[in-house]
Length: 306
Image (cartoon, rainbow, N blue to C red):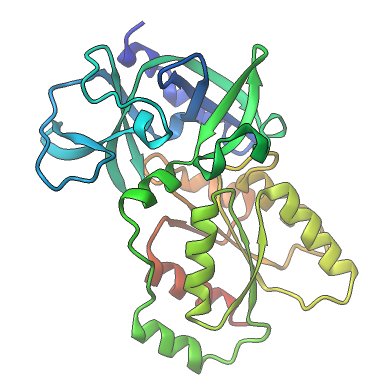
């Protein structure tokens, strides 16, 4: 099956969104280990084209090529995850993706197929598996371990530019009398969580942290039942193990004690994002990653009590 044929039915996979299910594109990087990324982030799968490599490129960049009239970087995903580089492997494949409003290619050894996973079947990887922060979740596919690549971690290892809020937005944050100055950040990516927490530190906003929607819901329910300082807003990723951002938002809206919380969905799934679904699950806003000033401004607006 060709890459194009494999992705012909991607549109049908979008119907899984909002039901705590996800479609994963499976591939390998040099041995029998299966890896996966969300089909929503995939534009196309191609045979590795000729690549142009310039002096001074990052060591994880295999080069660049012309994709539909636009020059895009190609990242050697095998090298990024500790495998032998695929830069000179003629049989390698290129997975063209869109993350956080940018298009890039990832070299993989081969692609396998698309599978559907439930959120409940995905779980955070044990440190003993040795993936580190390069993998955000694992599950079993026909008895075989499948690891979901934390693409945000890979991209940050190439472009580690710190997220800074502009001085103007920081001044706005200082001038607004908001109480409590506390939000919940929900994201399965270690890199994403750190970037968001550092951003809100600049605005003197405290962050509660959860690694997935299930953990977030447990923390929110415990907070409402106890004496812990309340929050007014939940900032959540969409694609997460156990309970995704859509399902978390729906659960918040269906729980009377939590219904009044503001919810912002914050995701790298910007290319095929369904605005209708945001309204259906009851989220207040969607912000594509990673736009520091827009995210900060949106959170400030929503934290002001009407």
